[in-house]
Amino acid sequence: MEGGDGGQGGEGGGRRRKKSIRQRQPGEGTSTAAPETSPAVPMEEDVAAMMPGEDDPIGPKKSELRSRLGWSVVRAIYQGLPDFQRTRLEEIGFGPFLRWDELTPDVALIQALKERWDPECHAFLLPWGHMIPTPEDVARITGLRVDGQAVTGVTYTSYQEMVERLMGLEVTRERSSLVPRTRLQASLGVADACHQTGEGQAEYMARLTTDARAVLAEEEGAAADRDLRRFLILVIRKLILGTRGDPVSCRCLPLLEDLTQVGSYAWGAALLAHLFDSLGTSSRETGVAGFFPLLQVSAYYHLPSLGRGVERRRGAVPLLQHWRFCRDERSLRRQVTLIHDTLDTVPFGHVQWTPYVGEDDATQPWVERGRPYFGRDIWLHCFNTVVPLDHRLVARTLGLH
Image (cartoon, rainbow, N blue to C red; front, side):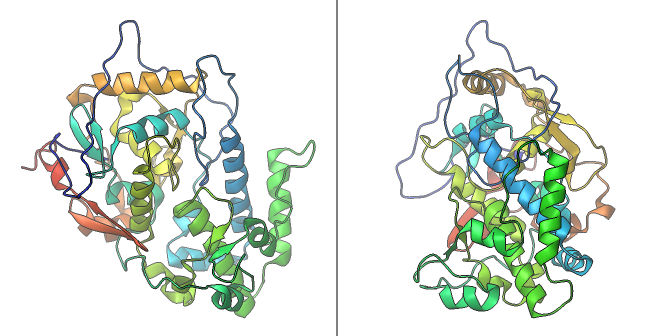
């Protein structure tokens, strides 16, 4: 994230919304986190489908369980791919992203940030001004490239022929781009993705990996290309550009027809555009579609006073692997309230404006390639979604005026 002054932004024709900053109530403090022992892993699902009451029981949310299952499936398929397929993923630029470890969704932090989002200027509105997740955050945290060709193209009325030709699957309806997730997973060898009775996580992952390895093509050719497209569709549409629904959209399949060109697209910029679009949904919708760990980890770097994250692997890149969430056993509503109170009282000097100083960029070529896009006003493209990233909002706070 970057910070900015509290000036007005955006020139859209919609009605301007008034923002108010909640005042801290007497006797309320900031959140203190308890250490976590068993991290879960996120995927694309809503991170907070409901806002529980103060006395609601503590335990894993249904969405967390779905997310844990989703990332386990992707991870198992990746481990089941033959070596030449993983080499292709490295060349495409997806290797660093797919190697990131477990990260428990910080549901309260993500929900609190969503409530501070100003959809008119595409930024978080905080007491000291505006803050925005930037292409530098995306490149350093996820390892995805933010430079290259825009993720956009032609929208077809029917994807049926293309899905059958390039993936060997069928869409749900003739005029649709959706493929059932279970059918896509089954084509990659993980039809039975549920935990079996008494099965530990290690045994579960080993079983899924073995199942995937048994059906994936072991040699280069048309079958291997089909496997790679199926896997990329799963990764892109259920992680990078994640949506809330269960079916998987094949809308990006035209960009995967020539697998040698997949790495030329700015998938990291598309991730950010999709996330901005999701944050701009109605405030009555809790949770965020898209790759919400980006918000979580960028907040750990820029707002350390919140105390929501703990370093676990110093020097690891991408920086998703650097953090774990300190689980807070209080109710979700209480946590969100305390985060808002902390945001209202964080001194300007406690905000980390340049948290990446000292990082070893030599080990992160995706950062070096994206550097020309850092600190600039740019347009972010994700198919029919095009949103501005207005760096001028943050220039004054950063002292660049």
